[in-house]
Image (cartoon, rainbow, N blue to C red; front, side, top):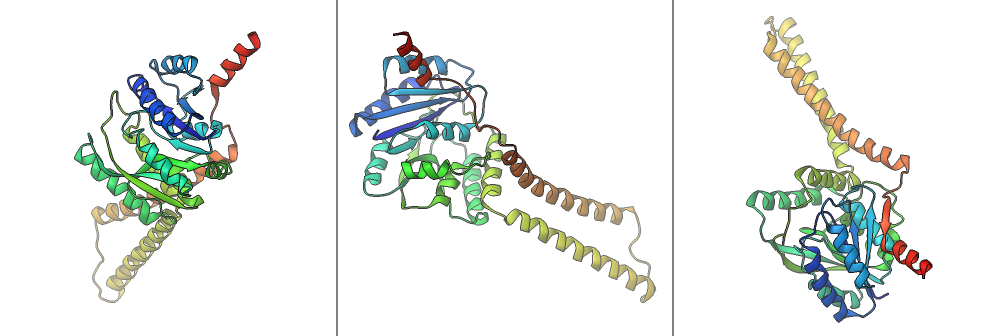
Length: 317
């Protein structure tokens, strides 16, 4: 198969029909041999029903439906696992990323690039707070991680089949796909675009989910937080040692009593306790990742898929 498109879906019933129309038009101009894979991440609206209708009338449309909500990154991973195209595009189902850009990305791919990612030059429909937060996140991530993850990019990209094979060899459960693709390497390039506002509905990425994604990105590709925890421990130890020396000199050399009172004690205990909690939290994040990987549970569970439905119908015939 020439090209596949993976579209993770979570409560996108208002966007699916237009996504299908625009995507079909784009892909049919590239090749007649294509597939559109919708991955339903346990939507609570009519998303799955709409996808089923599209799959029944168009053999190019396939779908996977999870048994529960496993998250955006897992949905993308499942779509990649089941894709068959030599080139595979990843795009969200909210129409903020234009499907028409895939033609330009595919042209770059045919030039010999294994990864063509979409870089956002601007964002529409996003308040100033989120714009600043996004820019800050990508730049902090760039400073902390040991590999260079492209700035101002999401998961909207087109990748070669060889990239998917390498991704399938990465067993970690806390996925940060854009970081994994950057880590793999190969010849990569980008195309710039202006990201549109969401067409319909509300975003499925809450603040807590964005924070989790940020933590997965940092802990998955950097050991600097652990070094930070170690350095904080050294700094606090030096600070405490200086206070002890000061107290001894004041008491026995200068004959002046050291600082007394509950305020100094409370401040010192709170400061040291805060540092300890921060370092324990950082270490806990890394241990949590190890624990998730050691348990070796399935990355996702598919309740229903278009391939299964089609096989059952063929058996009946």
